[in-house]
Length: 266
Image (tube, rainbow, N blue to C red):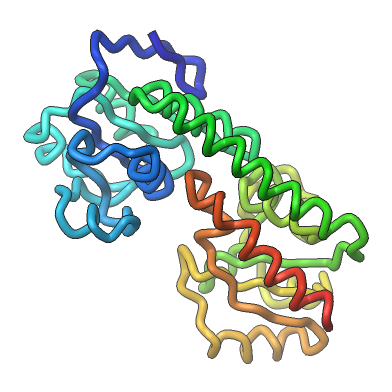
């Protein structure tokens, strides 16, 4: 008997051999825990590892699943996430399959998920070892940011309309751990506020971070934001390190270090 991050009980009579992962970061986690043939289905956005992206059956997008393909794969376990998957589709899957759901808002939630998934798929020790190594890496970030000025920061994930990252999000937790003062985290009523150019200018961010996903911001967009906030320092950042909460967290601190050092030099 297993419990997911909603407190739902999932009963498995044997170790799962036909797993479908509906979340890119959790797909990569399953690979890094040592699974191979057990994963039979992934989404169109599960680009890591490339080996799986090329050969494993795709079951649609994270929010637009192909139920017929899922049926054909006959999974004995489906792993999803509250934010990344559509609630109605997940509820439909739960009527026919064993579905384990994660619900992640911060690093601790992610670490708990890693250990729980490891137990779920028979990779308990590998998951615990991964958790401990990630914790060790993040302690380095804590040391680096202990004397930072906490620059006023805006992190954008979309344009037309502009969407920023707010409070109670995993990305906000990563920003905080990097020593950034998220300007759009003060409004607890919305996790991803839609903002206009006037509001962005009014906030006067010292730092603007443009994510590579889900909207693929490029260097050309820096000029647009520079016209809105002439005094801001603007960076394109790899969104995977700020938003993927699986085994990629092991690489995230070293990436964050580079960003922190770049900003400290300004």
